[in-house]
Length: 456
Image 1 (tube, rainbow, N blue to C red):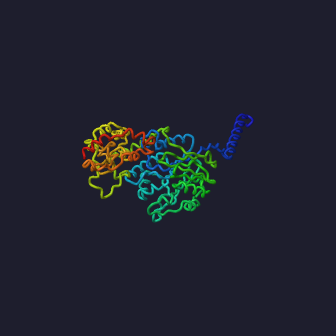
Image 2 (image 1 turned 120 degrees about the vertical axis):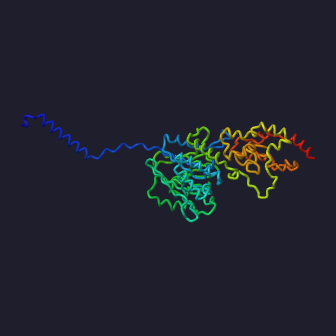
Image 3 (image 1 turned 120 degrees about the horizontal axis):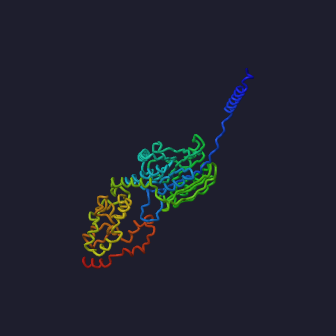
């Protein structure tokens, strides 16, 4: 019978052999997938933003701002894994206006995917309750390794561990005890870090310390911590390009967020290289960050902070004379007709319109230099007083002059020449040259002689 069916037997034999091969192959270990190339890691650290969500815009060559920072981060992410960190010093003050602006900065940082924000001196001034509120509202990941509340409770997590690709990075944050004011428990940065490092559950690939310390303390900390890979911070007098202190690389960024520190590792275990990056006008503004800025300015317009709710209003004595008030440019026109006419056609005379054109009229930072008598009695107080006290008027330079208008023999408060640099400082007017610019607004000699004759 079997002889009559040779083809069927051969087919059965081949089938059994195939099944055997399949069984044998299933017993072999699976082939390992080909390893994928590890992308370089770029760590970008900002510090000392000091309230500058964007440059004020008074000069075309100003650097800094979250919109440019975001654009630079987006460019880096094309070719590398990027870890964005902030070493602290982001608020510009502690007033209600400064708090609102800091919240906007934090929202921008979250959109940047900032992994850790160290609590610096300016942040600490806001208090633990406000920092908790901001953390809940914005979801910013604060860190504080050597500062605790007065009762010993945690101000923020002492460290955070971030996983990027196949790398684990532990990030700590410290603040100089010399910069701490108020009732806080503060440990020396080095001692705090040496206490915390052994408690990490697993050894990370990289340890980063964000250090809000003066320059000498920053260098000393880096030189005394061979256990740490990177120490980056500020505020320093100027940015410090990455340098090595033994096995530790350290650097600093400062000056209103104009510069960031970039540290790059080509592969795990490789040497760190780095540089200081200036966020100049060649970087386009991020669309997302500009939307965040618009939201902030819209909030400002709705809130309409008064001068006393900012850190820009003058501190006035309690015994201020009742006639020590802003009179308004109209009051000056009665005697100083020609001067006022000349001033009215100048850029100073239309300074408020400049803010309207730039959609920055609701920002007190801009208001205090584009109005008359900001924060003085009867001077500019809020948007409600823009019609009468908008623009740079006579008393912006000469001071509150109601007493002078009532009795011309009483001199105005200020020497006008000394007032220029209060607004035309290096940040807002970097090209300002006193001798060159004074000639453009020199006035008053002829009128002064007439004024003397009237009052004699």
